[in-house]
Length: 173
Image (tube, rainbow, N blue to C red):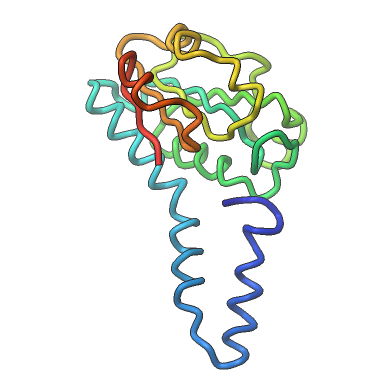
């Protein structure tokens, strides 16, 4: 969970709870899990790539979406940006496509370049944000963007598992 409100509001609650003498363990645990999700997803994708004989430093991944939630342009505190940073730490080359985000704002805030349209020859695609624009991509469309033995990481479960698994490796939260 990213964004400028929900992502930070628990910290205010934690601070106030501690000031009143309470130990907000559940809230702290939730924040910790949320903060570790980008690294968890990047590690899982890296494991999937390696299991297919694809070495991270030779792979190319399309990340679909960088805004903090679907159908908005707001990129503040985007967990997707953290995911991209984690993928880059594994030397994975990423293309980022988001029709709602401003390319200038993304470049200024995170140092990432956006692609106006997805390319081809991706080893994997990560559907990170469920923009309505992405619903127009069929499984066949996604597969056409990827090379042999493709991987789809569908963070928000936009696609039907049974349908996708007939065509490619599929993983989601």
